[in-house]
Length: 170
Image (cartoon, rainbow, N blue to C red; front, side):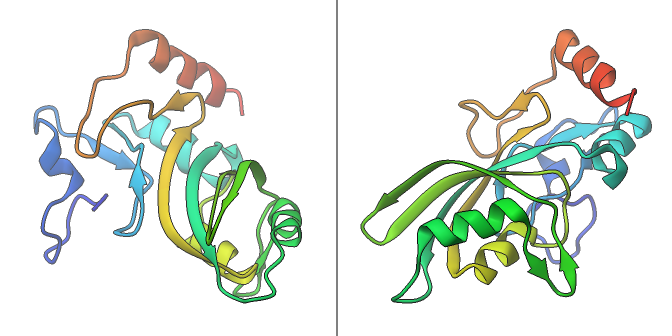
């Protein structure tokens, strides 16, 4: 679970990394989502990556199944690309790529520039899809790559500079 404090969580993200210096997760991953999570002790960078005005891109890999017999993938993709109404809020348009359909499963990448609570699950639900797997594969220019669940690494100097240069001017 991507949280620092949760009395009910079996294992927290901060349990996976050294405690000195203390670092904090940038954004969150809920229990139904896995993937890339940036951890830092830089408050300004955290703000630049999480504040809605900066529109930091987050890309996810989705595996889903249709919820209805008459499901139309082309219409679902079109709706996701324009924005979806979830609980009275119209999401910003998403970029949907790498769409693959195989028997009863559909997979695709979706890139969003905001982060509402369970946003991708809710967006998919509203277009007739049930998310079976959700993995964050990219935040801005940083990619998950071949890292496995629970692994971590320090950012390289050039990755830190790139992040700062991209988001300090927004």
